[in-house]
Image (tube, rainbow, N blue to C red; front, top):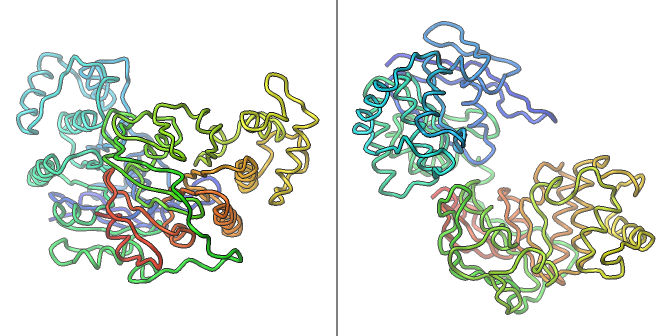
Length: 503
């Protein structure tokens, strides 16, 4: 089995100095399914985007069929037989499926005869085991349907290599079994298949070889039949994150006495942005005086759960109960007035308004819960006094309260946003990845604030940083495929939690 593509010493550095790929070398062979396995942020997607011509490395090279290959665009990859199916496929919503397929073929430099194209699609539908409505508009497709169309495009182009980024996220077990057969069939035709996943059992059930990435590096390449799940999990998370019992670090505050339930999520079912069921029957309780964590790898329903709890996404079934009141049908503003504080993942846009001053960002957020600032007319003198109090709560570095929020560093934006939410004296704090993108010192400050706030509030933290959750949580719910796979209490056993995360 000879090599189709060699990746040699590829390094990718994103703005801000984040090293996404750290001197990665990997051979991809003809006629094999290679699973690229790793946790969130391991560098898997970046690597296949380099091969697809969508990301430019600062170092390294690609060798395709023995010849140096330097794609300057996605079109270059298409014309050289390389096709990438992203986790969230992008389509031209105003086009029909057939028109979108024709556009892709033109980008790849293929001449098109509509009649022959439709006949070829009909032949491939039999091979793939599904049918595509060519007259449907792309906006109406579910994410699963879009992925099927992407596979169809790859075969229409007679691609020599397919790279599939987390393609099973929205598949049922039955669909995955059929999908495995399809991948094996493609490899049997001599094509190279790169299957990006974070699920160990999927990698072992379909791949010939498994390449494990961690922190931007390839840390091991194994024959699928010669390695166990235990070993792969160990390589994914490292020795320090495996077979360890974690007890959260001691803070100065005493252990909080748990009170009555503040948030109850009862058999919640929520659709995702593409109409797929993203949250499937989730139930959880958060009590006053405790920090509850939700762990999981990206794309397993955590974001949709977060949006349903704060009122941005309407559930199709189930209830959200706040302090004994059913608020399922209530909007975010009502929940905020009832004592919900929200710390979103996106600081600018969701949490803070770009272009507005520090005072304005604080005032406009506090108006619904602090009538002293004003309602229809803002008392800017009072607003400035409140802003000074908020900034002083945790020593936010602000040189001028009249400066725009964009003048603050990311860490100070996060401190300001959290201080503003705590100033509301909420009964419930809901946070999504509260330390994402922060340096170590600022992360410690933010975590301390979250834990300290639980003395007076209930706190729910949804985070992709398992170490963070192990440090600050009293209980941890683990989500995978939209379902709660386990509930864990401290002292935490990381082995059990990781196994639940990766299925």
